Image (cartoon, rainbow, N blue to C red; front, side, top):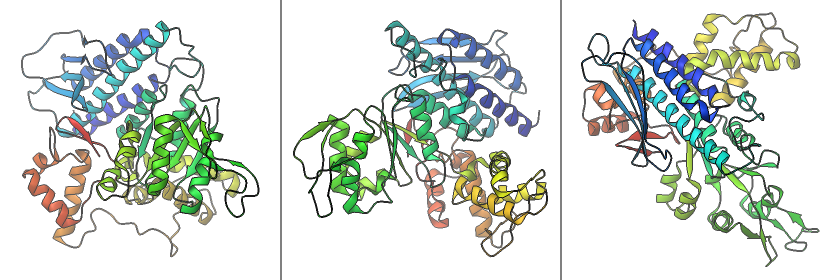
Length: 472
């Protein structure tokens, strides 16, 4: 079977498995994993497929599931799921029918499936614990009659990286843990924050949003914590802050990396003790707020540079989720394009029924520094430009400069594009199993040197599994 066909079939498995987590019945975990193992074996053409959940804080019971069938001779491919130095699960498949190693792109899809099976076991155990404790399921369970896939109706795409981010949302949403969404601007961080809120026990309470980058430093403190009458010139009345407004609900701190250091100290106190004072008051007030933070900055670098408090970083970084940039999920662009077209047709008085393949190809070739938000703007501008029923790209002066990957002018351009392509395929791993350096046939340090020379940088906020640990 061609590698492209194999990868496409594994991607479809990922796309079908993630929605099952939305209404997971904890009693059906065994059948879910056994079915998935059977489908993996069928796709790969091998009788050997097994998954083991390790004994860890996130996976309390050591268990093993095996695909029924003969176990052929040969060494299987073993893919561990490692988080924080702990092995949460292991997927073993193969060997391949021809005895050759599985291609790297196939191995990457299998890693995603291994992570999803680990999440399935963890979610099942959490739901069983809730049931044993007699906890009401309203909003706390993934198998209730509350919000379903509609929580993610504006998150469009089937790419493995996006589906993995959705699966991690499903894992953390029923808890009260602090979540940090890391990704470039325009990747949909607020949509994911709302999904966390809608899948939590707090979904009937307020969801309050604060853009920390949009407020001047002099107003951020009063915006977050409120102020008393007469606290400063112009404070003619008492005002409640966003933390009070979000009491018993969720507070979304967008661009948290832009907070001034003095406000960071007060935010840390609220996160640790649940207490704060309004500006101009010495009275402590208590709140019960779940915080979902988002940033496009590299917070770890900001800590080293003294721009972000170390203690606040570790207090926020309980459950980080990396949101993939649009350039790493180009296969989702056709669906996103049709989504934006259908959503804006009535408002723009258009009836687009056709998008030429050349237009979709041009959209897929663009690097999209503004990600999904930029794509939405380009599609809307194209709809205004298109007077018939066919979507035509606007070729005006503000149209992004489309560039085919084959249109290069120097040897350096060729080298840069090839290294970036391999890094994306290897999910930006330089060390560890299936790393880019090994694929390129060079030492990891040599690859890092070439990346620095060519100006290639890992996307900010992208979590990478290297040497058994996640790093940003």
